[in-house]
Image (cartoon, rainbow, N blue to C red; front, side, top):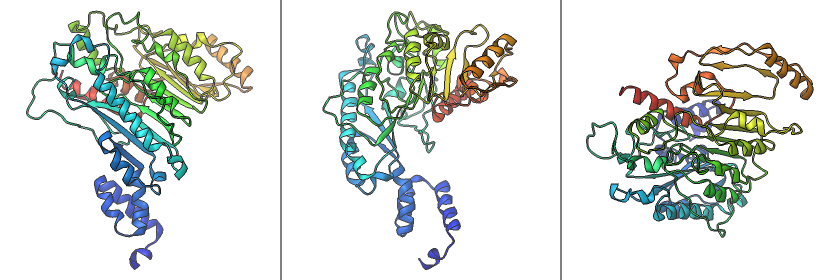
Length: 445
């Protein structure tokens, strides 16, 4: 390796980066065997992003030795549920997942946290934990055009599509069975109190790609085991069910019960939905009292998020609460010492557009973007300027607006991207999934 040792550092780095970009991730292990210098570089990439399932916990624990634990920065826990068919998708499990599914979620969390409990002692830190749930039968009960992308943008998760040709766009089109997993009430297993706390994890992600909602009470129990948690991404699917407005669980009203650690700095909550799924549900009256296309979000969630915002640096809550509810809950004596970004949705102007994002970014300047023409009156601008002068002791600059052509918007994800929001309202991989799904479904019309 004499020639390699004499190679300039900048050139070596370019070679490493070229290999990372042009060769499959599975080949990185071979590169790490070339020499110690290659091993030091490629092991960081090999172990940086780990995908794990419960059957491989023993192997995971053995391979990721103490010296490799500091290299791990992202763990994707993919929880595979048992196969199912239409015979077990009866009405009795519409409210909740099966006991076997709840047990699998509980065992997976318990097993992983048991492995990770002492990792911080070996230098592991700032690990992001993503949790997703799926079954090999899911593609028999959902739309073929749905897209699932790895959070690291390394691969598109085709999982296990059914073998053989299939010409139909939808499976189980006229029944409720296809909707029960993604849009039902989900799983609510109790996490044992004996499960150890994990200090190495600082971020928790439950993205839209999970096929089964993890209930808020279980999310709370997971959070309780993460004392160093700083960031949460929670992207549950919108729930469609009987008597949706009278049950707080349906509108995620149980979010008000969340008790979050003082270490938390960033919260992104995105209630996911699919316009094409909704159109199918509503047009066929699959569930008699389905949610309306534009519904009234939970005021309790708005109140809870207002209180939560006092201790956060960044907060984004989309679709499951209303900006008006949030601001009505704020008290005149409150002071946001840490808050730098706030993103909320509102249906106040729903006659003109189904979604509008309001953004506050440190109140040094205000700008707007919309898919329709909007004009702020002089009175509104004067009020903003007065508040900025009183609270921040500086002048507030108001920029002109930017119009986005509605013809360029084919989904709420595209709208979010075109509006160029200054803060994150959903995981970037989730927005890409929604954007690609909209393209896929539009080709079928």
